[in-house]
Image (cartoon, rainbow, N blue to C red; front, side):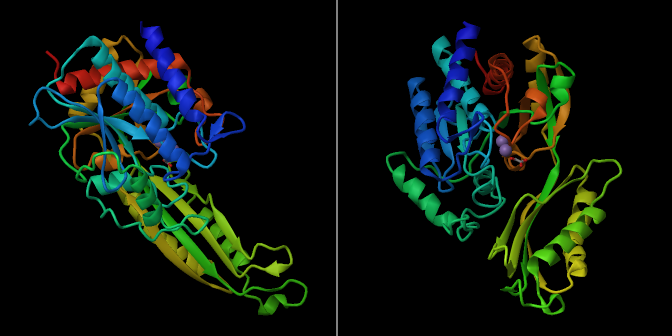
Length: 410
Ligand code: GLV
Ligand code: MN
Ligand code: MN
């Protein structure tokens, strides 16, 4: 029975991964695209098969609700996201949504009625790959930012976030619209670890205690495009050379002998991006993370000065696009996940998350926690991302046990 359920979960993950499949077993399913809409339709169908009802809010968050016996009781939420990185894997996000539906299916198949409703959520744009920043759906749901905050953010093709969201909502006009936000008794998100610890320690499950903080910046270095063959170096305003100076200075300033701080420049757009033209403009991103609030704030606040101090020829505009302080999960939910892992007889440990997740924002308005499962070599945000059907199934068993406790059965 258990094996059958795990096989169905695996098959569903593979079916989802065909929507946006890229070479090497990867997935490119950007948020608010046709592929994203198709993925949502798939999971809506699976949820309906086990008696759940779909609805969507103004931020595009998709809810799949299995009603409990007490309509006045705040629901238990679980879920994750269906969008992927541009060169992402099959499990980041999709696993948490599919695992949640497996919990609904298990309750349905067993004919169990919970007191609290159980809702599986697919949050909009967790990854921030197409539109920056990520977690826009969960930020809007939790009231951290207004839902229209990102309307004018554009993707690489110039499409506005607000327009892409409106198109998705139009395509789902058949679904009931629900109010943004609301009460939740608890939120639990199942996710692959995206790091190497659980595999190295041969453990089945991570009981996640919190998430480190993240700050994102978009840096625009403005110079002047010129002819590579004629413009004297002394007269140039070369945006690429100044971007390199700025990044080099940041690398020095962000060096951390303890190797705890994470500093990434992962995206750079050079204009006109021609080998015989001096770069007139460079836009690059900064992703800065640290578990200590004060360090995150101090290092993040230093970014602007370090960049300005490094420029020789150009001017730079620095905009902070994401600001998520470190979050500690609710002790009662963490204990509940730990109890669930023990009751399933699985090897587990408490651990923090280096990646951010929607639980970081949901946790600011509702008691939240997360369950991690191991992934091979700790690889994620990469087509090679892999967890076995058994590893994913173990996490889903823990999720089911925790949801059953929180939603109150019997
Ligand atoms: C989430 O995808 C993250 O970048 O941590
Ligand atoms: Mn994720
Ligand atoms: Mn991710």
